[in-house]
Image (cartoon, rainbow, N blue to C red; front, side, top):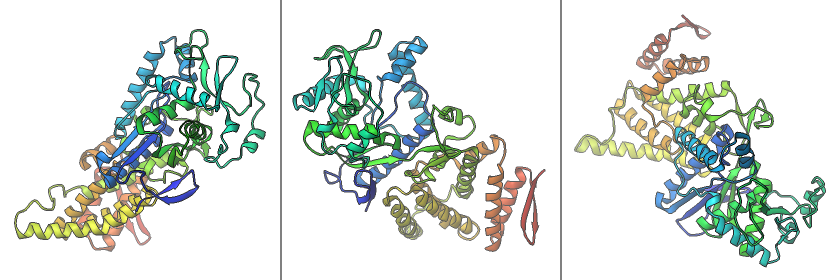
Length: 478
C-alpha cells in the first residue's frame, strides 16, 4: 500500500486516489530561458520515477502526468532583450534543449505538456472569476492583484501564519497594492514587452496564475498529486492553492510532493552563487545513467550533494550492477519447452516473491529509491554467487533484476557496452577498483573461484596489479 509524505499535512499518508484506480499528477516544469541544470535534472528524474511507479500500480492508461512549461515571465523577457532575440525563438530553442536533456536522462515524456501562452483564455477566465468573487482587484497601474488576507487558510502549505509572513516581509514600495502581501495575477504591458488583450488592458499573466489555470484545465479543479522542487513550496505553490481554492470553492490538491535541494559543498546550488552545473556539460564527463543513479541513490526529499566524487561513486556502483549481468544474457527463464520450463517458471515466481516484495515495500514507503536500489545489489550479489554453480538460476535473477531496475530507469543499456564505455571515459576510477576488489574478496570467502578469476581478469584488463596480503588485497596501476 503506497504511502506518500504529504507536504500539506506534514505527515506520511496512505495514498488514496480521488477516483479509484485513476491517478492525476501535475508537476511544475521548466521556465525556458536557459539550459537545464542538475537541480532541474533532479525534478525530471524524481517525478519520472514516481510516474513510472504509479503506472506500475494503476496501469499506464490510468495515470495522467502533466508537466508544464512556463514560456512567458520576467526572466524570459529579460533574456530575450539581452540576446536581442524574439521571445518565441528563445523559448522554442530552450524547450528543444530541455527535451534533449530529459531524453538523455531516460526521462519519459509526460502525457500532457501545456505551455502558459497556449492557455491565455483559461487564465483570463480564472482572474475574472476571482475579481467577481471579491478575491482580486484591478489596480490603478493596470495590474490585477489577489487579496491574500481574504483567503483565511493562506500559509497552510508552508505552515506559516499570515501575520508572521507579513511582519517578516520587506516593506513593499508598490503603492498600487492594497496590502504588501497581495500578489499579481495580471501584469500591465510595458513598452516592447509581449502582451495579450484583457478586460483590464494589454498585459500578461503572473507566474502563479499560469500553473493554476493549466493544471485545472488539464486535470480538473480537484486532482490527486501536485509536485515540484522544495523552492516552489512558498510562495508559488502556496499562491496556487489560494487562488485555485478561492476560484473553485473547494480543495485543490490532495497530496503535495516536494523534492529536496541540490547542494554543492553543502551550499544550495543556485545561479546567484555561480555554483550550478548544466546537465549537458555534466553529460560530457558522465554517462546519463550514472547521473540518474546518483540522483536516485538519495531519497527525493533529502538534500543531494553534487560532487565529482559522488558521481564517481555512482559510476562505480552502477558498474557493479552491470558486472553481474555479464556472461548470462543467454539464460532467460521460460525459453525451453516442457517440464523444465515449468520448473524454471516456478523458480522465477519464487524470485518475484522474494525480491519484488522487498523492492515494492521500499517504493511503497514514499518512493524510497535508495532502499529499492539496495535490493538490486542483493540480487546482484546472488547472481555473482550463482554464476559458477547454477547459471540458469543466476539468469532468472538477472532477468528479474532488470525488470525491477526498469522501474527506476536503470540497467536499460547493454552491460558490456556500458562497462566498455566507462573504461573509455578514462579507465576505472579508484572507487570502481575498490568496489571490484570488494566483490572479489566476497567471492573468495564463498570459494567462488571462477568469479574471483573473472574479477581479476577485469582488473588486469584495466592494468591494475593486485597483491593479496594477510591484511587484504592491495592494488596499484601498472
